[in-house]
Image (cartoon, rainbow, N blue to C red; front, side, top):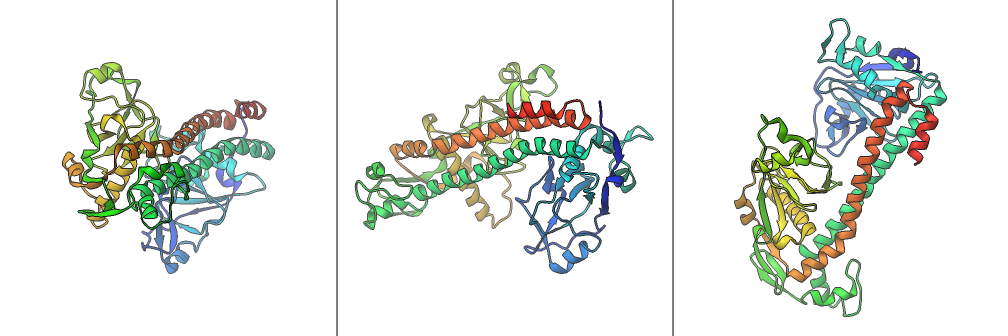
Length: 438
């Protein structure tokens, strides 16, 4: 049996529209929430925006966001929500509304999930009076939204079940940030700072000894001095050349969109919209997929798990590692080590190449990457045995990242399955608890 419903303005102590003015942007200061920071029920401040103190105070004159408040977007896009976490001091940007659920009637996290349910999103997206879609969530429509409202204890239970899944996904994301930082630090130590070589040269690393990140058995892999090169000092015996010297570059393709049997198959087809969060590294699912006929009937190429994909046109420089066999469009290149080796070295080198290109463009967006770009970017060329050992050293780290990505995908799918059933009352809380427990 479905839950009773109440109007949103009946379960909120506050519904406040944002200031109808463009914020004054600054390079630092007080955080301004933007619609791009709100997606899939979560707040993402990996790319924050700021204003100064005067305008921050002005934008919060009617109400200052506090922990447990919900922000909902009014347009572009419409109906996305997030919750204000503890410790965040911020103000609303444009096209947003602040909601403060009244604890006498509603659990904030439950309301967050209820607003994402199919029944409420359908109300948001359609004007019931005309049967037409609407482009702006006006305040009267927002206030009148019918929200499924079970008893408060059941709200807490539903919020706990769904929140447990979301919290685990968030924990995996944080773990992946740490793991990627470990892999990048090791890459920098070996191939940028040449720390093992410097340690030997300066007498800080002796045979049979270990240093942090430098096990004793690696001693003989590294020379004991640096020599001058066009890139500055590099390890003796190592080469210098274009990035293309260590990679195979593969172009992508798109099956004809007019041929329906080419699309909707089991082969993931990567485009820039599928780029994962930076900490996830791997892409394991894509928005679109193709069939075997689409692969055979086009210039699309199948790449193996562990291959690096980089966007070369449009949104340039986005990176991902294939978490499974997949294809990709013509706006990207796939990069793999010569002879199929060096998967992680290639990915981390490509990350550094993008950073170098951004620096060369003085912080602006570089417009394109061509095959000649990989020739022009000069890199150190380590011996094959060093590359192989690096792969072994970071394999467990990158494998753990991929494991977290796959687990998070499964948890998110479970959440998306349970959410509408719990909010509608179709699924009992006790049954959902058993599913999550399993």
